[in-house]
Image (cartoon, rainbow, N blue to C red; front, side, top):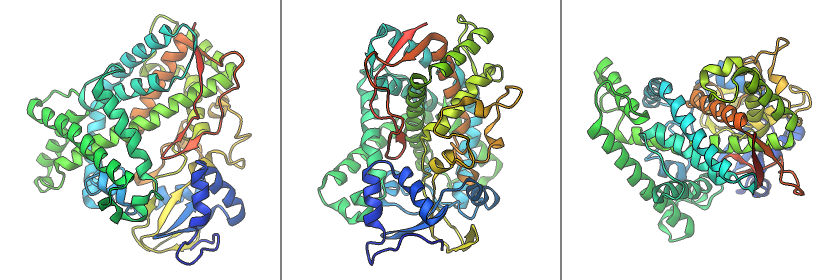
Length: 468
């Protein structure tokens, strides 16, 4: 196993790690620790020894060259409890059933992708109306961006959308906000699962979240089952039903392996992970535009020259807007919303950077460290979209840059990567076409180091959204 700080009996490295987590900047502390212990080191967390990987080449070797070796997921009580026994894509352990489920979900995403652009454009138009109504006064954009992103997810998953004061929308936001703190490895229920039977705050919360969310998603799934028509794909749930039917026709042995629970938990993944990551990427994008008005002006100049101001940009325009694409890529790097991977697990005895890794060992990949590695990036603390442009001014895709891993890699690469890129491009281009984001007069600039919970979020800030 790789070296690391000396663990204490029973407590392991808990006394070191707990303060790092309380600072809400664990990714930064792990990066600092790598300067002392090396780019690959071990932390002993009670109940689970974990290898921390801070190097992009080693990450790509582990996840791409040896893609199955680290494709497992370690058990965590709260995640298992909220995914009906790990029946979702994100948390489910590596198995033949998981591989089949991922194949079905990937097929469903391909079926749905042509529909997505129109849904995103609709929500960008609605978000623009709300921004316009503020007439340039300082606002906190969080709630408006939350609504727009949630409506894209709702439209994608079951074809619906909400107004900002809709009780069902507020319920979805509430259960998501209450759910994410429960996922943290050092939450009381993960340290001692028996506390689920004790009437403490976390046990009451997790029961309410599961009951509320599952009643909502089960109802939506059953509505789709009853109204689904062969050959008509209204949304992702229809696409999942269709993909599952096609898989069963292709191989009758599949029948029964993928159940309603698997489909509903895939819907839950879209609502949780898809909602959080995209929302906070857009909020970070606004922060970077406030800090870098010259980047914002160049994006707008490109839009004016190529698209004009009368036609809403669409996905088909992306190859004509390389600087916009580069700005989105730089936002993904500099924000590193997914700063740390979801923990992986070695599914067999293997090696990592010449260290022996026993089966069952947890491995955590620090994408923040990779995105801020000054050996791989020139002045990584500077927001510079041109690092994603070649000498001809064309966009360099992620695969061409070793240390750029905003969606992970290998077997566990984000399944919604294509959908997320689609949504971010239309949202960013559509907003910059219509508005400029400016810092409120007399106010300090927003902070560039946020807070890490499940994802890396901005600290609260205000912005003046000024119509062009």
